[in-house]
Length: 483
Image (tube, rainbow, N blue to C red; front, side, top):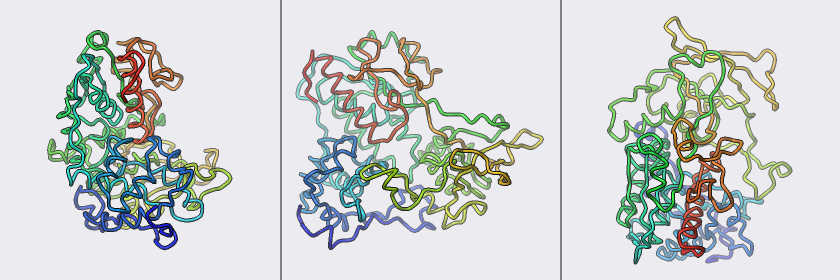
């Protein structure tokens, strides 16, 4: 540790966000440009370099956090980048999108604010790109073996990059017209500008990874035929089967899934559309679901100029302090957190019928009601207790011209034809069944990420991509691995 007293003398300071009134008028990232690097050195100095660093255990990637904290505190950006990239292919993604379970596991978090690990990670990644410290790493020689990776989200990209660098010839198949999966069309621009994604894809192309866009395996390409052409196949399609809400009025026009809404907004930012056909402009919007996807819809609707936006969360409002009995350190606690989108909704008073930050907690949807033309006009809801039982006398209605369902995902979409085409077995939750080595019931076919483990975090997606790449490399090389 560079400063043994850093955690005693330096308070936690996070990357500041731009003023709400400024940032909701554009789609740029919410943070003040250039404001992170001046504060990140002293923040890294707060790391205690614990004898047993629980941040390692809390991070699915096993990031070497105390090591690169120390290097940043000493301004050794080259070495910090090397240590960070040793375990994480895409730290500029996780530094912006990960909820930072590592910070929940920080020893400082026992009784004071944790180290700003996520901010330090993002600063290293951005500085590394600025200084040319992450050049392409093509393999010295090719193995002569071929791998198809189906899906170009964070799992597929991580697997493809690792396998390419190991010398295998890798082709990534993506059903959309651009590479990136959820990073491309699910994550709003204000959370991560797509230039970060484009930069990594460019690096991967220079390393030798090949990309096949607008190609849905199982529909556009025969799945069994694809398997016969490659030495191994990695399924990294994500969990695309969205969860439904079976309540009266679901069939009304204006009730849509979040992943019908968010991609269109991203296409507007990309210049594909002048205006989204599902734009929230001038509409009363109700978002059903209290998670990150719902918050992404909230921030998007605010930027589109919604008349009002309310987010319904079936869970009770969590506290601001960790419950030491129910969620003891170093587990990731369920706390009341104010995302950038909720901060915007609070300051702009986007939901006058809801709590201060646009969320209605402990709220369950009863039905959607519509007009004579079959368009949704209101949402009927009721307050519930901890067991989700309705509370008498709490039924109310909210105006709604647009309802967005953000209820999560269960596994691969059976309609894609991939599972049936390959003859894959599924687990009880609808995810692809696999063994401890990521292998499915079909020889040479492996599964990783949300398609196999269920909906999870971006950091888990990258970790699984790296792990499945090592498993495939062992399979192709007869037992040893270079990954």
